[in-house]
Length: 241
Picture (cartoon, rainbow, N blue to C red):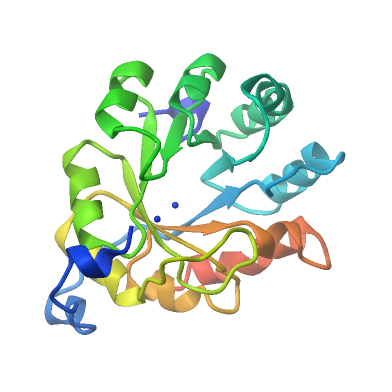
């Protein structure tokens, strides 16, 4: 994912993927060279009054690939007002600004891309609306089938999760790290690991094959502030370097 300056996460997968995934699948193949995993920040469900400053602190503390504005219960006008200073901040730092769920709002804002849940529309429709350079991500829960469908539809990344318990949203699907290894072994489309990810538990996800760690509470609720949280993620992201 790239920002404005260089512009190029649920259905139960068990019913769709009846064959159990071999946890050692990826280990049977010679590992291809991989770029370092990157950080993908998600906004909290509601924004505190000082959130612009908090986001600036996070972006200045270490490399961040993307920021997703994920606000629930607000109309498009309110989200657009909240987005303006955050989008400008991301553009200034070459961080991709992604809108959650709403491709029409992403178009209105001139966002770098949109993240689609399973009920938020087809990636092909988003591509037509947003253009060839837009970053389009799709929530795939714990399902190989949904991920392959998203890839075939032209998604720029697929998001698997939840990997761990999280208070950010209701968890209805739990994914295993082996899913990341299976995907990254067979497909070139990047994969995002989401759901309760912290510096303490992120390492197995990076080792398994995650290209991005999507993080919310671990950053915004960190007792020492978002900058410290981002700094703590840096060595986790670089463990394969």
